[in-house]
Amino acid sequence: MSDPTHRIVFHYTPKHSSWLNQIEIWFSILVRKLLKRASFLSKDDLKTRILDFISYFNQTMAKPFKWTYKGKVLAI
Image 1 (tube, rainbow, N blue to C red):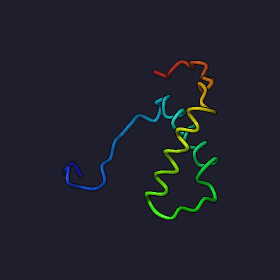
Image 2: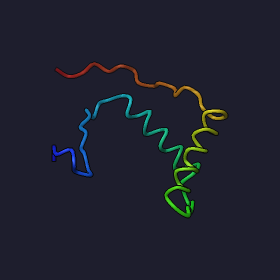
Image 3: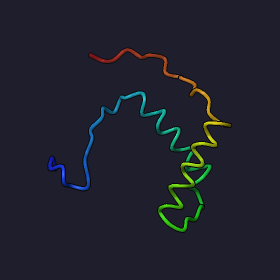
Image 4: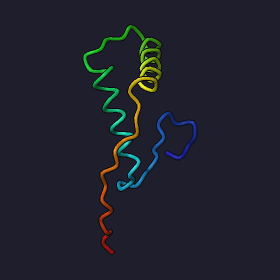
């Protein structure tokens, strides 16, 4: 699987990566606001609609995600 000619490449990230929560939140917004029950004519149509949504989101809806993690002590 380390052959660069393979179509699929696995990237391993730690499960405790706090930035993953923010990415999951953003993808949740994308799904709820654009993709759910949507229909696209082609991959190019999908790409265009996603890029348009990102532009719209950045201009009208974007705000910092509220960080709620309280900093629990990690078990040793």
